[in-house]
Length: 148
Image 1 (cartoon, rainbow, N blue to C red):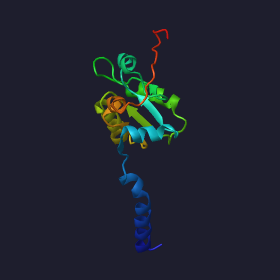
Image 2: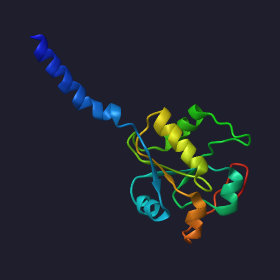
Image 3: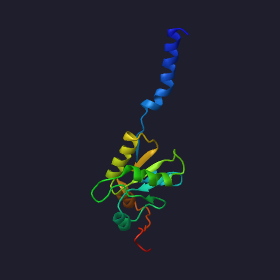
Image 4: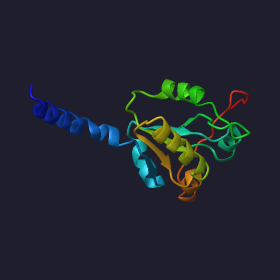
C-alpha cells in the first residue's frame, strides 16, 4: 500500500470515529414538564438530596432517593455509582438527577458527563423546588431507620 493510500485510510478512519471522541457527553437541563414527559419512558430519576430533604418535600413519584453528598459536602463517587448501577436497566438508560434547586444535581451531572464521560445524563433545572412550584405530585419516602 502506498503511503498516500495509507494516509487517506487513516484520515477516513479518524473522521468516522472522531465524532465519538469530539462529541463529549453533555449534561442536559430539563424543565419540570420535560421531566414529566420522561417519567413515562425508561429514564432513571435519582434524587440526590439528603434524607431530611426527602422527608420534608417528598420525592418525585417513581424516582429513587440515592444521596450523593454527606453532611460535610463530601462524596464517594464509586459507592454512589455502585448504587446507581443496581438501579439501571441498561448502560444506555438515561439518568435524570434531582436536587433542591438544581445546583447540586448540576455539579454531579457535570462530574458524570465531563470527568467520567457518561452520556444520557440530565438534571431537573431549578430542582424539586420548580417541580413543586408547578404543583406537580410528590410522594413520601422512608429512610431505613423510619417506620412508614
